[in-house]
Image (cartoon, rainbow, N blue to C red; front, side, top):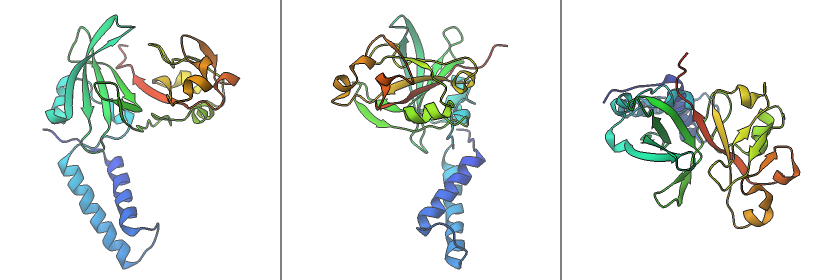
Length: 239
């Protein structure tokens, strides 16, 4: 299996290891120097054992199924199929479970060129085969967005420019309809909102459920546990 290393994430990992060993930030004594050496050795081991991918921009450098299988062991990959468009379109997909950080990333293959990427999905919430929640994950983009980003934070990132979004609990739930020229509209990724389905979600925010459209600055969404649920990269441009 070919190794692929990204130096920036490795540096961040080295800093994290150093912080854990020290227990405090900063410092210039002999203990710190010893800790730094240990951290470098730990990073070297990690780099030697696996591929370091952290950001969305790094994951989307993988452009084909062959490349994905070349970079990762088959034990970290699961071929499957998914239905889209209210069950009208079936796509072959491969789920990657990153052995270094546990990220689960969904590669969706082209219908005609089955070995090429059509689009890639990054989800905040992970599910098992029976749709039980198995965990959550924050996967960051260099643009400043990330899976699990709270609704209010996303609004601020969009410079408080209002946008419309679809209600939840159906096939096209949480779709965002941004204004032209806004940060969301100019961002290179598709975004879909989600909501935390707690015991009182349906009772406290009933208007947000179903095939409806609301504005991000409307009272209907105030205080609702909405977050950025899915980020999608739509594949290479054909230009």
